[in-house]
Length: 261
Image (cartoon, rainbow, N blue to C red; front, side, top):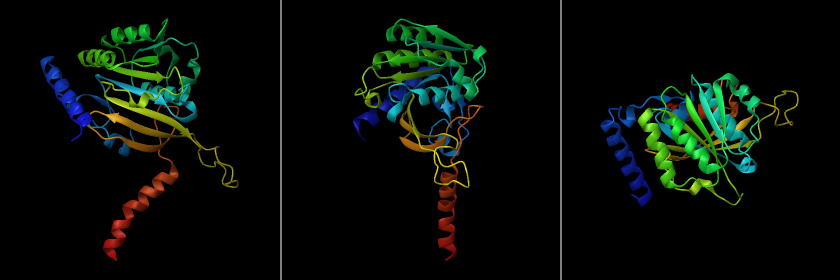
């Protein structure tokens, strides 16, 4: 067992001990928010996105700097919750009406403009302590740091709240995927070319429902995985691309054919 994996298991054990001390349910029984996709939910130890936790999301590929797909992924998560949301940021480039396209009612979101990333972290830490919020989103530009992420995680565990960090780099060369963090999961969302939408024009890709490469980069108690998914629809739900579903069906059928042969 490598040192990183050993540390993750120790962190998980400490979190479960703390949950018991606070009278909360053990981590394995924490309330969760399923994605509704069997493969994705099966990769998560709690069968979905754990509540009482902080999760990080970063954009990938050409979207790494702006995080537009990561924003929509977070919006999809919010659409499947109920109640008010705090969204803290320091850069004025969020096109808020777009969140309605993934099912987020604008009246649910309270936007908090903070001066810098440090202040955003303070807002998130304070807000995620409050019971009654569906979620707290913080757009963080630059590094977060292990200590700060631990503070956020402990605050979320105490309240049972859901914290979502939209990570954005100050420089494109900054690889946020390798930073140490106490967040329960870390995701990277990258837009990929979707298939043709017109049957009579199969050589014209990119017209079908948008597709993402969804990478689970880090998961406490789980393993990294990569998924091909359709982007969130108007209810915030991800989909399975037709070609992926076909490959999965073929894979499931292969052992049966072999057995019959």
